Length: 191
Image 1 (cartoon, rainbow, N blue to C red):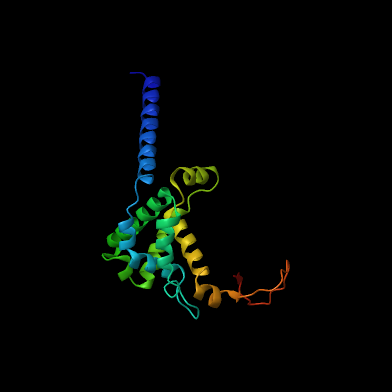
Image 2: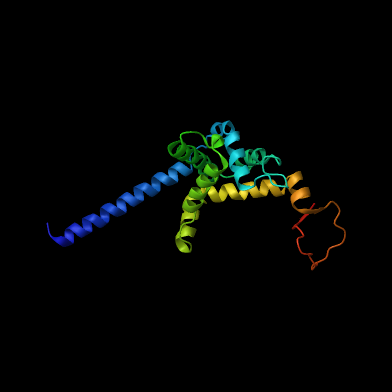
């Protein structure tokens, strides 16, 4: 066998493997979502959301019932691809946590939970540009990105989040395009 034929065969083999892997990932992301797993892990979702928005002098994600929002959003408002990506991400979090700490995520202390979240955040930070757009188009956004998006949306649209964490006016009055914000003022949440 000469070198040229070997290179061609290796290239074709690699291309075939990449195509097969891509097809597997595509099929995995378009299968029927396991919504029973999602609803059965409400405590995990609540713990993840509380790690992202913890309770301080302001209410946290648990106080705002963000886990309920995430469950409703995932089951009723998201595509199958996004649901599968989120469910697979939850499974990955539990598997990684059990390997690293020997227990479930909810049972870990705050430092361990932050370490786990940092790991998944670093995994979600792939190179930007065209590769990121292709990955997002083909496979969907990474789990951690989806988790942050729905957690923040659930928190900001909840009563405690909108009234206590954001500046809230029930009846804002007339429209003002440019307003002055005083130092230390919170962002506006307008009904």
